[in-house]
Image (cartoon, rainbow, N blue to C red):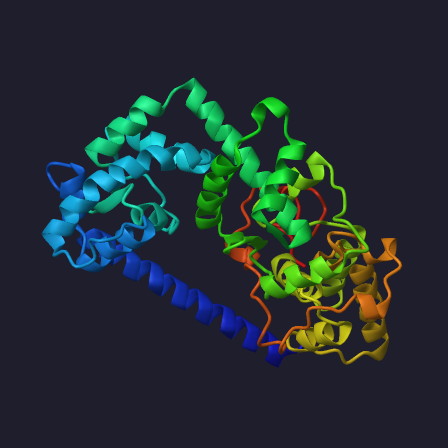
Length: 407
């Protein structure tokens, strides 16, 4: 790798990490400024919020006719609405949220052992479900008394089974979106239910509740008006239109296992072609495994959004210097193989080599400009755990593969 480009990339990563840490520190200080009321009734918890924060809850819960109220009046008006809403929301949660809420419940509604940097907690706060503040110098999160009572009455073996079912539903939906890019809610519902046992089928309205919550919580799927898309889709409307135009092919059939595995956070479809491309960057250009995974991830995003080989090379040249013509030819072959072996959104999840696609009927979603239009791949250096699958594609756990390697 060219030293100049390495330094530039390192500086950019350092700047991004510095900015992210700054945002987390700002958030931490804001939380510690909140006082936890002696009485943790819902109205008391709401009183610790600013008028702007109360307006956010009002907006998120679609409450009309109270926007002109002063803070004290707004607090009293929101409390019964939130309690009623909680009955509907608690039945949409997945396992992660269940574990958080159960932790609070077992600690009489308040806990200080929740990850300080889990910004997803802010989502539940913006609904008026949980609140935060300072307790003995630590971040504390709590359920107001009324909501603690609602949750405690719900939490039994049957409820936990329903939560597990929600988790399965959202994971299967995420897996489909990984392969298809975008689906309408109706398409997503039909496909997910088709994979599940009949006795576990949800009504469409219940499915929608689960998926809206999942879209707000997970971060790798996004809700839009008519459907959902994977977080790396640049233009979901364009993709949906292109898929509709492809009446000559149906969405590829996928097994339960394929879809469920693809629903994992930061999933990689580690084909032989993926491994070969990642290994090229690790061996020829001495990239560490996580950086190589980032580069291949960016290439995959360009591919899925209809980018051409030239656009992939343009991105690669912004990261490394290709001075050896022979190695450049090797890279081109690897890119072509990766392209032809990847399931593509524009092809409804099919691999291009499986289809005889005519140019004029396969109009791509063209990226507006690269590299500025590249959707940033989630840096694996910040999200890969010791027990996660290694990004090199070996199928082994990270701690038993590339974690301690000097590449």
